[in-house]
Amino acid sequence: MNDNFTLSCPIPISEYPQILLAHGGGGKLMHHLIEKLFGPAFANQYLDERHDGAQFTLNGAKLAFTTDSYVVRPLFFPGGDIGKLAIYGTVNDLAMCGARPLFLSAGFILEEGLPMETLWRIVQSMREAAQAAHVQIVTGDTKVVDKGKGDGVFINTAGIGIIEHNLLISPKSVRPGDAILLNGDVGRHGIAIMAVREGLSFESEIESDCASLAPVVLKLIEEQIELHCLRDLTRGGLASALNEIAKTAQVSIAIDESAVPVREDVQGACEILGLDPLYVANEGRFVAFVAPHDTERALKILRDFSPDAALIGSVLKAPPARVTLKSRIGAQRILDMLSGEQLPRIC
Image (tube, rainbow, N blue to C red; front, side):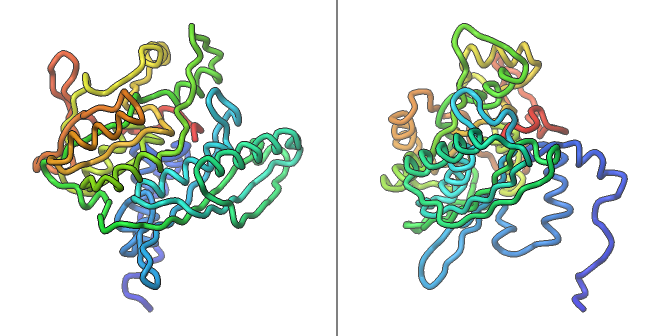
């Protein structure tokens, strides 16, 4: 028997109720679950990178592989739906590995009684998103659960892509001096969903930023930008992504709040709902950690895709595993990871 094997649970049973109330990833509870339960159980060189997907070489080809599940409520929201989300979410995870997305799988868990018209709309949305992202859905599965047990439909997609360069894009490649670039305004996806749930209306409808990030990432690579790390800002938003990277890379990250673009209507909605836009989920936003000498070129490319792209901070050597924020009034504070989830069921 392997000496490292143990039957004792690494997380006290008393902590399970808190974990189960987390409703997804992005906060301290889910981070704790990954670090203390899943990580030790499945530890290997690929998983230990703590990236959006695994990167490996097979018969001379460099590949990236990822998977994600989608449980958003409502199924349809301004700017997207669960089908579009399922395609772009997995395509974006592959892009964050610096890979060109190629093939996806799709698994559906359907609740008994789901209207066929609803399922047809979702499938058509997935087809259109896959065509736009230049990927093919090549395998899949369908399961049906009892009425009341599935909340309509859950979708899992896995994806594989090819890495056509020699960069090692990973949190562990981040180093002091790196510039931190953001590709656009934050908070729209989470607020678009919350507006529907809470029955909020604004002068102009807030739409999700759900989109494929592969084109802009592939352009950065084509232009030979020295990329060290990429991370999309989904559950937990910008703040959680930066904290995860700071911990994995054992560096300090400093950002300027005034440099982070937030639309006025999104900011207003966050104030009404008591949310911080830095923690609100996105589906078309990412941060790029770029070598200092390529900062201006990279920022120009990002702005060709989104004029709101910005340089928001930099990487420091110490103290390790810490993210600090310079507020709009000039005060410094620690930008920590949330202890829970701001927005359950947003992706």
